[in-house]
Each structure stands twice: as structure tokens, then as C-alpha cells.
Image (cartoon, rainbow, N blue to C red; front, side, top):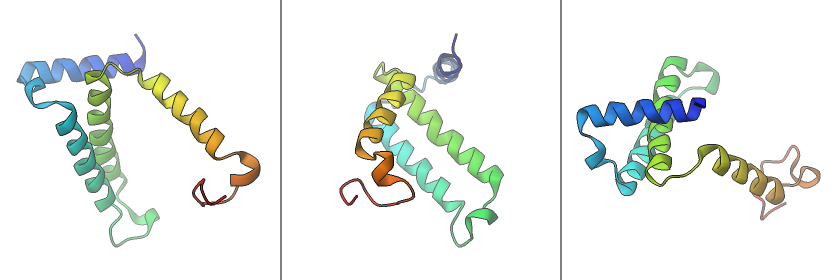
Length: 109
């Protein structure tokens, strides 16, 4: 079993034991991801990036990933494959010779 599959199975068991699957539809998982991402941002509010609390970052990032993994599972998406596909797509949009060292959006390079 891959690490990703192991995590998804742990999440399935956790939710099944609590009868929470009924709440984890695509819409609510997307909302939960957004809320948890906002809480991750809060870890950086009013401080330099180096002064953010790493424990808070770990906790909130885990929450974001938790819901993202559940959404992938809900829609039978292969996390490894969709990530590799997105990296390939971004490589096309941001070729090294144009994007290296630039923070510009692909439409501006």
C-alpha cells in the first residue's frame, strides 16, 4: 500500500467510525479546504514568514491536506497522477527559459 493509499484508508476509517461520510460531499469538502487554508494563512498574519509558528503551520496544513485527500477519494481521483499531470501542465505554461526567477503569471511572461 502506498503512503497516499494508507492515509486515505486511515481517513476513511476515521470518518466511518464517526458516521461523518454523510457530511463529506464535494461542496462541503471544498468549503472545508478553503476554511482550513484561511486558517493556515492566519499563521502568517502580521508577522514575517520566518516568525510564523511552525506547529500552527503543520496543524493547519494537515487539515488542508486531510480534506483534499478526502475530496480526491470522494471522486476516485488518483492523487499521484493528478499531481504529476498538474506539474506537467505547469511546465508547459512556465517554460524554464521564460519563467526562471520570475513571479509573473504565465500570461505575462
